[in-house]
Each structure stands twice: as C-alpha cells, then as structure tokens.
Length: 517
Image (cartoon, rainbow, N blue to C red; front, side, top):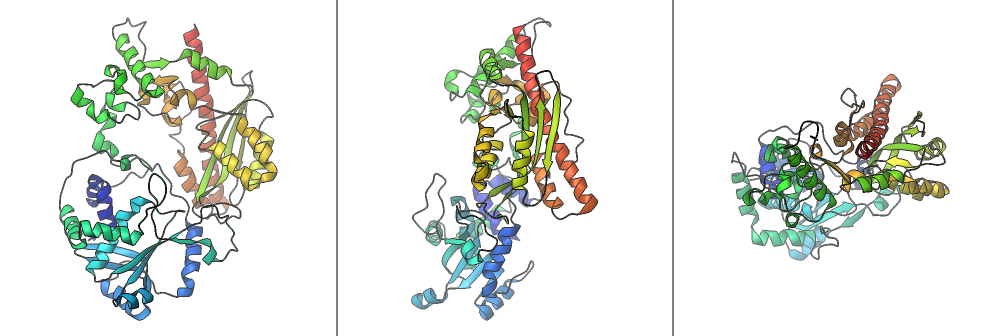
C-alpha cells in the first residue's frame, strides 16, 4: 500500500520518495529536532471534545470509515484508500449547509497544522488526499486548517476554542497568502491533472526501481536529506573540489566547463561572497605549496591577517565563553510564551582571565525555569569583558531578547549582556579564516578538529544539540537516579561546547601569532 504522503513527497523529490519506499533506513543521528507538541495535542483534543466524534485506528478498512461517517456524520483519523493509495484524514465532517445548497453530499476536511500559517508546500499533500477521497466517492466542499495565532501568549486557563484559529489559505514562500482557498487551489490542480490520472501515475511511479537525482531545496532544508551523500557523494570529493564552492548556484555546471578544483574558479563564476573568495585563495595557496619545499609547504589555509587582528583586538578581558541549550514548543504549557516559544533549560559558562585562569559555571533545571535561568546567568557573568558566543544572532542573543520580552524587569540587564556579545563564528563565516578541510562548512564541530584540541565529543552519551533536546524531553518524565543521570549527560555536553569555543579562540590567536612571527 502507498501512502498519499509518499505521493506528495515524490513531487518534491522523486528520488528520495523512491528510496524511502524501498525500506531504506534514514540516519538515526538526526540533525533536526521537531518542536515539542504535547501541549498542542492536549489543547487540540480539548477543542474537539465537544464534537464527541469516534476515531479511526491503524489498520482500519475503508468500510469502517464509511460506517463512522454514516452513523456520526464525521470522524477523526479516518482511513481511506483508492487505487492502492491510502491516506488518513485528521478530521472529516459532513457539510450540511453546503450539501443542501449544492444538492449533493459534501464534506469538510480539517487539518491541525503545527504552525501559525500553513505553508504553500502543503498543497501537494492536500491534493493527494483529495484525490484518494474522490476515488472513494467523497467530495470536499472545503479544506480548513487549524493554526495558532502568531502573537497570542500562552495561557493554560484559556478555553481551547480561543487557543486556535481557522484558516483556509496557504502562505506563499515569498510572503503573503494565496488568493484562492485551499480547496480552490486543489480543484485547479485537479483540472490540470484529474485525480484519477494522478493516482494512476503515482501507482506506476512506485513500481519503478530507480530515479535520477536532482538538486532541490529539500536536499538541505530544513535539515540535510539522509540520502544527500548517496546522491552527491560529497565526502568522496577532495577538499579543493569546485563542487564545494559555498552557496554557488552554478556549481552543477562546473564539470561541463572543465572546472574541477576551487583554484580554477574565476571571479565571474562567483557571486561575490567573502567565503567563496577565501575558498579560492586557500585552494590557490595549496596549489602553490605543491611546488614548494617541505619546509615551506602548508595545508591550504587562507587568513586575512588584518581583519583577524582587528576582530581579536576588539575583544575585552575577561573572556566569557557562553552556550545555551533550549527546547522549542509548538504551544508552550508555560504562561506568557508565544507559539514556537523557546525555553532555555541549560547554560555553560567558562570565564577566562588574561593570566589564563579558567573558571566554569553552569545551570540546569527542568520545568518552567526561565526566571531562575536569568538570575543565575546574571549572577555568574562577570560585570565586564566580552561574552564570546558561537552563532549568537540566531541563538543565544535571540534567546535573551525573547526572555527580555517575557520578563521586562530584567530587560536592561539582558540587553546589556547582548551588547557585550561577540560572535566567534564571524571570522569563519566572513572568510577571514578558511581551511580547505572545512569543505564549505563552519559549524563548531567542523571547525574544532582544524586546531590542536583536547575537546572530544565522541565518548559522550549526549554529543550534539539534537540529542540534548531529546534527552531533556525524556528527563522530564524521569525521577530520581535516571533523571540525575540524564541531567549530568546533558550538562557534560554543554560544558564541552564552551570549552570548544575557547579552543577556537586559542586556535585563531595562535594563527595570528604564527603569521606575525
């Protein structure tokens, strides 16, 4: 049996859809943790409780869904199948008013969306579902979307009917909403390719054994596809391969132009990004070093010494290396947080004095620990000096500004902390420093092995941010020894992140000193 989601996925990337269909296992070491959904689901159940609708179950036959519709004129999670394509509709209701007006039975399909607006990319899913329903003789009058008001603050005591909002239009990728409703957009697709033809095409497609890979947005967003390496074999390319040019739109055309290495790339093949320039210069230095003596040989590194010195001289002692861990909620169970609000449950802080003395401070709590988090951090941070953070704009700095909105009594202090923050990622992302071994990446764990380092995540029970979040969610349900062990594992990981920040700073400092000599 083929699921309608597979049909929708095939429209985005046929190759991935087929590989997943062939029981290929996705990587277990995921790069992306979906926002926590338990509070959303609880309130969603509260919203539907007055309808008192029966619910379908995994493995139900289509006849069981029709029996529910006949007896109750609606149902939750009903299963339908047509021409070998199967789907589950979260909420299906008989539309009495429209049915009388049109003189034929019509139904409303309603979907809970974990968002403040349903994205345009969901249209293929709704089209596939409508095709299956049409094959079962069920015609839709509307497709409605249950979403969250964008700026509504969470309140556990708010009635469920006021927690959600109903939309019937999809948000376009470039902003704004479609003019047509979801059902109008689905019907427009049906006119271009009738539902029956679409289902036949899907059934035929999944009988295939192979497809051709093609680069699409889904290859890397929101996280890298588990089959990315299988398709593009990037790790098999040398460090100076032209295909590694950062964010290049025309990299797939390099081979036809006879461009194999980064050092062969001219200015008109680049988009003017500093990282691209640094990559090409590092590759050219490597080519020059191949003809140098052993004593003169290097390792394909480009450094803008003037820019690096300027950036490092701007830092003020003591240096505070700071890192947060947090969880994201679709709908927060804690008062005063917006949809997709973030709860910081952990920080690690290493404070380095100019004489080399290093002190460590840490915070970890479960539950609604926002106020305790703020007060502990403000107490542990020194009153002066730079606060060194990796990728601060979308992470630590943003988290503090959100906390300042929720707790205005601390706004001035939190904004002052933000003003002292310095982004350790800047030298790497702006092309001030580039090592060919980065392979166009500049994450903390990519950069750390480039420098002599004693920091290693390999032996940790929790060794990346996603695992830290998932471990934290499990920890919330544990008590006693198990909870303490999970907290200890998360804290050890976070403390290594701030040590890694110090190692990167030391590496840059050594690089500057070496060049100066």
